[in-house]
Image 1 (cartoon, protein in one colour):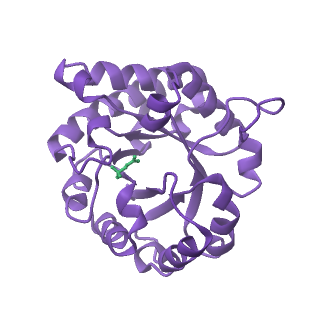
Image 2: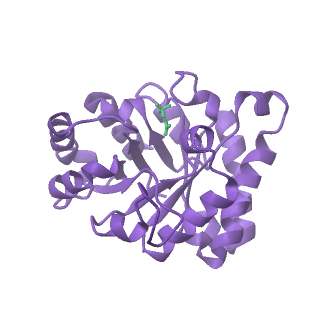
Image 3: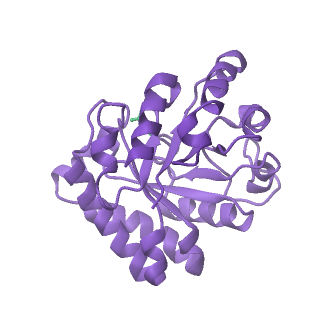
Length: 251
Ligand code: PGA
């Protein structure tokens, strides 16, 4: 399956810096040739800029969160319909920073995924255990519970999900899951998708995220069930990000 690399800028960027970065991405040959699929998830304030620079390329773009509501008195929220106005292809839902700092529950994440799908946007459902959960041997239970909530809510649309396994202890820490550690979790998530969607689950993409860099991308992407990456820090550095895109194209 063709790999999918998604950059997550988090709350970083400004108009000037973004422009330089986006122009560099737009010129990436691995993406231009179709050797891998690629997207950038930026703060909503910059979606117009992503659309402007990337719409004539093979790049796709996305947001980092979406409201669980359709419209109305929800100050500060952005609906899936509003994202769609900027031709957004993807939206992250349930990123661990949303779960941790904004108290997002499994059911709220599921509702967000539902809203995205209804608007024609592919949710990238983020799951992952904390260090304490891993040490207690709860990793598989945690990720299965997080994904099950979304599968239950979206029903047959589960075939359209992208899943991202992001161990919380690996995000932004420089500590990556080893390829076999990540693969073991991806295999469990794959089995869960196949149980829900039959053979379609075999072609659902499961991304790995958490300190993926130019140095470790190739080994992670070589694993059977690692279909791409969700990249935070390294997606802000054009040289590092392009090395990851190269690794994804060669995998
Ligand atoms: P990182 O972030 O690559 O900086 O660890 C990944 C993410 O949070 O999506």
